[in-house]
Each structure stands twice: as C-alpha cells, then as structure tokens.
Image 1 (cartoon, rainbow, N blue to C red):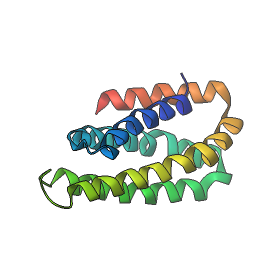
Image 2: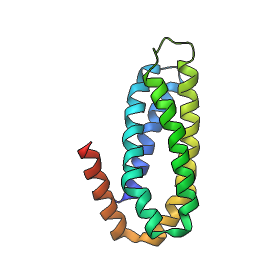
Image 3: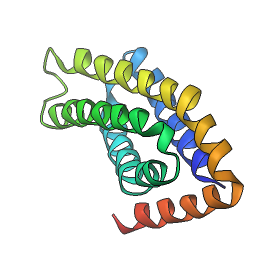
Length: 138
C-alpha cells in the first residue's frame, strides 16, 4: 500500500456513498461526513505537507486543494448541524458531492501522477504508513 493507493481507496469508498445520495438515500450522509473528516485530516497532516516539501512544482495545486477542503469542511459542519428532514439537507448533500467529486478529479488526474513520479514507491509507502498511524490516532 502506498499513499496514493490509500487516498484513491478512500475516494472510491466515499463515491459509493455519494451514489446512494444520488438515489435519494440520505441515511448515508453522516457516514460521508465522518469519512471526509478523516480523509481531509490525513491529507492535511501528512500528505500535503510532504508534497509541499518534496514536490515544489505542485505547491499551487496543494494550496488549491486546501481551499477546497475548507469548503467541504463547511458543508460537512452544516450538514452535521442539520436535521435530515430540513428542506435544504438533500441540496447541501448534493453540493457536497459535487465539490468532492471535482476535488477528487483534480487530485487523481493532476496531483497524484506528479507526486508518484517524483516521490517514488518507497517514499509513498512511508507516507501511507504515516497516514494510517494518523488515522488510528484520531
């Protein structure tokens, strides 16, 4: 397992939950929120700092990703404070899905290939280990 494989796996897990929301199943929203909180934390605590230090050409992408995280965190916080019967709940969950899907596409299409080619297998494996430890600590 390397850091990019780990992050992509988390992306796939959340996408499955978003598909349930697309079909009108809002019962998965709390699970989505929890998964996104963990995902953002390990990216912000471990992955992005490593990319900033070791892949300087991707600094602007990391900064944009951090801004996107702020939007997602705001939506997650709002959803967590809402009653699922609220008229805006489904709309907010849909906007969350759209934002996360955009973010995932950018990471997977732009950031991850650059990081993989620069850091290599060994360093990505080290980062995955750090990310898994960070996830356990929370």
